[in-house]
Length: 270
Image: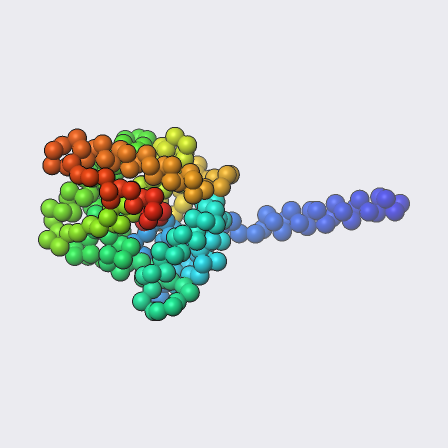
């Protein structure tokens, strides 16, 4: 009787835990639009994480721990990448010696935000924190059904050319150029296969246009950690393709000095 009672109690506890776990909200499905007073920035991914609640939904007062937990729980980023990203993001907070940043701080022009965004107009033409369909339409016009390093890089160069032609104050620092390469390596790797560096075009379109993780399209949080070595390796491949495409025309030829900044300066996904 005692053994039977033990098993009965154990079964009841297990069932209670299962019910409780089943009732817990799934953050991947708890997407919400920003409310009045919330802020967002130029980075579709960080905006997305706030919309899901992986980061503070307000988009404000994001600490290093907030960022580390949010990136780990949403896309399995290791702590080294999160710390690196925080060190960059904190520079955008105009308050000296701050220990936090808000997403709208990231819109400060030519700190981290840059001209030739894949989904925003240049600061001279509008607001970097607002998604621009026309800009993104140009980006995705270079994608095939599967986005890879070649098509992702072609989109970068097209946006650079268009922005330079339409923005009289166009400028792109070596750091800004490096960030663009990092952004492309990151969105392909995060949303698709980080080993082959390919991703379904529909997933990219879904996230950029909705600022929502594409779970409806079959995407899941990676089961293995996304490490610095993995991201840097993919950045190298994007960098090499970028140099190749630029050097395919005489006007595009340039030194590779700025490209080396990818290793030393930019691991991000704006």
